[in-house]
Length: 450
Image (tube, rainbow, N blue to C red; front, side, top):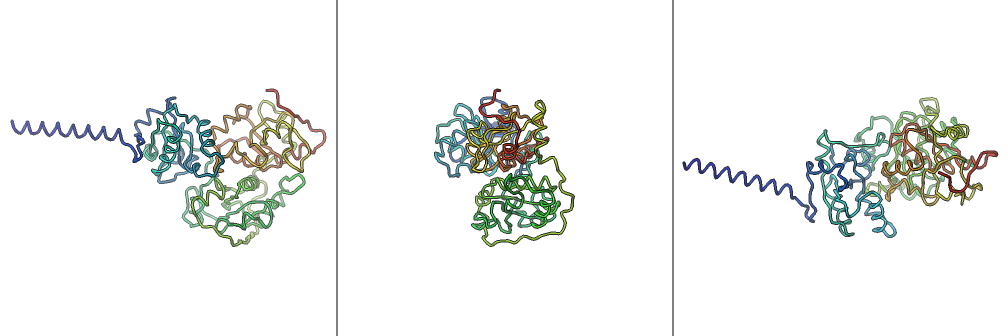
């Protein structure tokens, strides 16, 4: 009898202990008091309109890269993004600007906000910022648990590998064979205008060579050079069709311009450093000021261009405008350029847009692309881009050709569309400069009738 009573008491103690532990597991909090959500709890919240799931890691992890020991790359299906490093960006009226960004993503105080990371730091940083600004219903989660369960849905951009994190470039330099690199020759280039570039001279990634944008285009139209001259440009820079080419700049717009031209030519592996040189500096990696010389090669390896339809000229642009149901000529200029209040350039006199072109957004002036970039210069959330395009009838099923004044802004947006996985896409290289300087072409000004 004593044995039975003893066993019963032990059983009661074990059950009580288990219940207490389970209760403790369900009520874990961080050192600063934010409730830690379990994977099972989070599964139940997916699709719940009262909850917003937020990825607080760097943009590259959201896009698809496996960083910080996460088994699968990409983000939890349905999650939006608010990277912790945005809190470090130097912005005018920073808190107000960041809260506006949060609001536009649906991260608002009345919702339950689940913030996740993989390093145990980012989610709490964003939670602290939101709490300071009046948010109360804040939770944190470690995404590694989600990524380890193959049955739980995660999303990545189809061609996320075209945009690389600084850590990937560093591993490439250190010959560590980073994710998706298949070996072979590698070239890293800083891209900006001018033969003697102040940006390059001030400091660059170790081993990087300077590309002057005059090497791929010339005035007065600033169209790309002829195919044979582009091949000479590639050979002079040591680029073949099989070279892994990594491009970046202090402002990445010039890098995207060259990236699109290289893809048109037929270079198979073109990468751009997401966020540009600032992403490299943020990681604290080595910077050098010594100039690195170009190392020419004898043969490109394929006949240029391999991807002829990636960049189109005036006849194709006209055909796209005539196909009103299946195609869009997409204007990547500021609103004031689109409606003809300004040409946007001191060397372009004409104002307006090609008749029938639709507005694809840009930034507030010709020198930025804030509608397509996060505050740290990385690519904006694809869902947000697709949403404002849809308002103008710009949808992935159509043949989309992007243009701007002379091809720089539109090249960056074309590259983002490619990262997203859109297929029928191209750059109208001549853009507004060519269109407005060609007699007899139809032009519109003012707000369009929609």
